[in-house]
Image 1 (cartoon, rainbow, N blue to C red):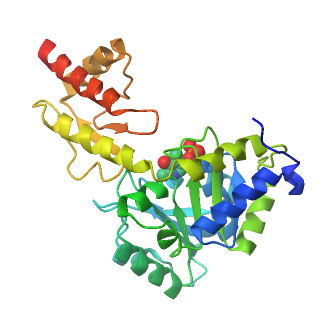
Image 2 (image 1 turned 90 degrees about the vertical axis):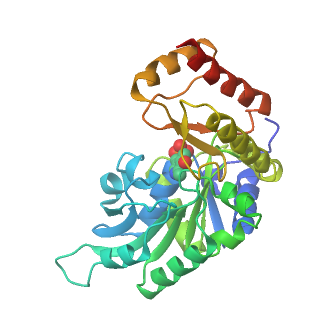
Image 3 (image 1 turned 45 degrees about the vertical axis):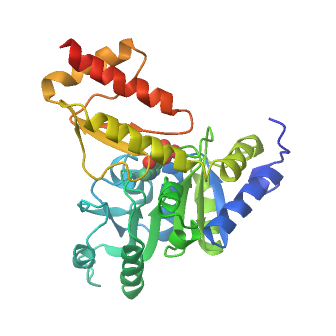
Length: 317
Ligand SMILES: *Cc1c(COP(=O)(O)O)cnc(C)c1O
């Protein structure tokens, strides 16, 4: 609340400028831009890499494609070419290669290749990123990372975030997910790309004036909440272990690489379990696969209470 502010539309908010400089430095990029959300950040990236009638290759279940209201198509006239994610959250490079369109006026121009890391909590292997970057380069495609949760990937691998972002032309990072800021994302990339994104941000109504009070929270998150992601990962492990000991619960194998756990129960238990937990002030989103995410507001004790409550439900039925 005490942040020094100025008019960021004129580039005069010192706190926003500091956040943008630090985000660029940490990701090893030339520049970055502070934006209202991860959705806006991805949209700016897509619109800055692609022109009207261009195409981007993206995961079928990727946030950018599936959960952002079709913004790239609606506002950017950019055609998606979705491909199914593999089990490990990657896009098979043979399939990506096969989806790149020949230079022929019948086709949209394939311009951009997008990945997501972590993908549903899964960390993409560094060797894969290196191979994917080579493919993008070889075919003259831009290479964008939806890194909403990329700090979880870096902490999970015990490496610097730059070792991941270094493979990409642009990276979008959410400050408001595991890092715990109330609002905001940063899009990081080459200066020219970020200049273009700044223009599109204005067009989309995303030019914020005295935004330093928001940026200050983002700075705090970058400076104080990165290393501690390890605690969230340990808590997710503990949660997965606890749930796997309940006979009626099946925990997705290989989840809990970072801060997400997926589990399922038989169909007839989904709604009653949801109601039972709600009574204990534990909110879950009912579905065939239930996602639980650990973060800085969730303690180990909270997790014990979740495990115990799910156990209590199955005892009661
Ligand atoms: C949350 C999320 C986004 C979008 O962020 P918002 O700030 O909610 O718009 C994009 N990609 C991934 C992978 C996310 O988890």
